[in-house]
Length: 183
Image (cartoon, rainbow, N blue to C red; front, side, top):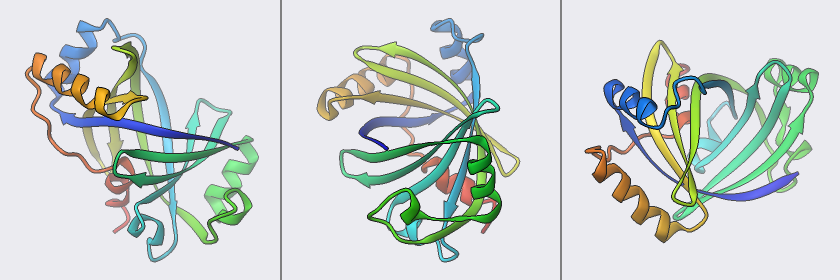
């Protein structure tokens, strides 16, 4: 298991701004697909506790289960790599969180998926992501800026959006957006 703290700033953006930024950073040919398969209890206990549990699939054979816990200045993440048959079984049959994360004891089942077409580029000591998300017959776009230092990242993100005439529009977590398919 690997653990890290994820510090990110994000905003939703319109389609034309998404294309503008793809061209500006010359990223049109670097888009890759990752699918997030989200899990929760039948009562959505994890979501209520501001936790996200997902299996992220990249390509045919790369799977990772991740537990994210939100805090005021970032998210604590724990990851476990899975093989394809493990991941497929978990998506089909659910699983006990205790099998992967010792401090969490729920039985969870698959709730929804979100396809994320993502590009990334280094930017000012962090990583800038442009995402096109598809779920529930909805397509939306967002920018994420991931950094190691909250205060510096917040300042740089504000400078970035200001310099590109982007209004900061709060956006729900990808899991919450995907869960709208099931509620």
